[in-house]
Image (cartoon, rainbow, N blue to C red; front, side):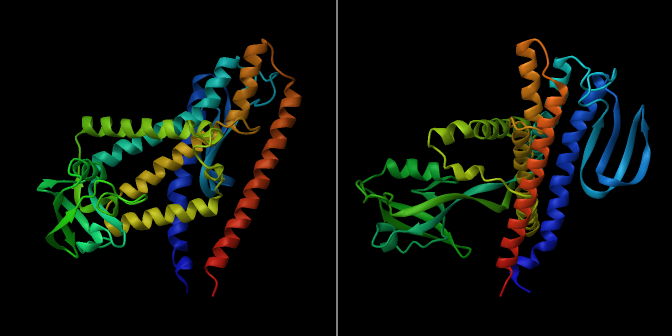
Amino acid sequence: MTEPMIGVPWGILGFLLVLGPLIFFHELGHLLTAKLGKVAVEEFGFGFPPRLVTLGRWGETVLSINAIPFGGFVRLRGEDDPEVPDGFAARPWPWRLLILAAGPSMNMLVAWGVLILIFLLGVPAPQVQIQEVAPESPAARAGLQSGDLILALDGVSVSTTEEVRKLAQDRRGQTVTLRIRRDGVEREVSVYVRPNPPPGQGAMGVIIATVPDYSRIQRFSVSGAIARGTAMFAVLIGQLFSLPARIVLGLVPPGVLQPAGPVRIGAEAGEALQTSVQVGSPDVFLTFIALISLAIAFTNLLPIPALDGGRILFVLVEAIRGRRLDPRRERVIHLIGFFFLLALLFFLTVREVGELSRSAGP
């Protein structure tokens, strides 16, 4: 059996551990806010029907476990019919807006919590690794190789590419001493730092990157983990929600918005899970969970009919106009959007299964 198929169990497990819980929490956000807004919730299900077990009731809400172990769902009473007194559509627009936004907001909250957890459990210390060595460069003449780890420059310990670049910048035109590690053995080499390197080459002739050192795990206090997790969360939110503007400005290629189906997400989740197991640290898998949770929030906020963002758009139009749109017309628009999303999901699944089959072929 070929390597791609060996990862199938990991992909299935990663899929269940990532998308299932994240969609469950998304729907839980809708449920709790609907309850707070006095909207009748007919059923809250873990997984998708058919129903396997009825766990009980929370007021009028049936709590169920369903056969397809993927996420969950909330069935609101009167979702599209404002004539139902305790239904969703009968509530004032601020409450409907809050209930609709609660799902994506819950995903953002989960991502924030996971990022804090990463720093509480510990992250690998950074280290600088040489990725490429330019031919005929000072680094090549000094015998540096791809994969070497740079530990210090002129006796100054370094752990990030920024530190190496700053020290090298201050020593242009000089010969510096690098302490490196190769195959577990440390040694020192002398490298000339060119003041005017050729285009596309660094001063020493190396391409370097900051990579994790899983032999050294850094753990943080609760306050430190909250601070670092919050900072990372802010950076990711800024990058994600500025993405459309950056694409329009040509700063990012449009291909980054290519949608991913369940097969691809499962494969990437499995790869992240397997990597975490291999390196003995959960940070790779937990980081993937945080990123997918933010992606779910972002996707659901897109102004597409049937998604939370599409419904939010209708509520905002109602708030601006001072009166709601025809509920029947809105229902048809969301129904069309729902079938479009189903068709897209089917297309992505077929394409990704095909890609997986080709990669697993002889």
